Image (cartoon, rainbow, N blue to C red; front, side, top):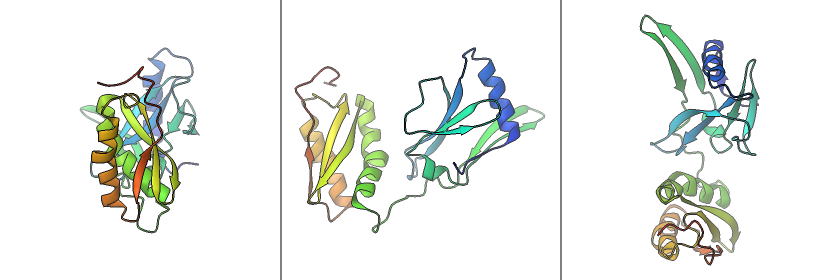
Length: 193
């Protein structure tokens, strides 16, 4: 069960918006962009059936389902979604006090720390090229990464790996020895050039 609270007023307001979408089974998805950094933004988006991700946590409400993004979930602890009316109409508010709090420290497992920096620092930059990178494995303190989206097959992927990703990860995680790419770059279908 998620620790996010969606007040009744917010549920009513969101349910009314969802009805106007004329899509059976539509819900909402709650996620945080760049969680655990000062740039964190809490977002609510429409979520048509099939648009939720397999790792999302469903939060069944009276009139719709809220899908909670798995990566964002720890940062949504104690979050409150509310709808307040005033003489100007009303406003949906989201208070997520933990959205900007880093969830890793020196004692966190190596994989969690690598994933944290990939999500908060590296992937937001790669997203502008339609790409992302994910951790596949760790082999003797070397992070084994796979590029996806626009990074796969891109001729600059090795430069990005060494100059950007490896440098950032080694600065943040001193016991890491390096990074290795296991992407098949012969597939250039989605490559960003």
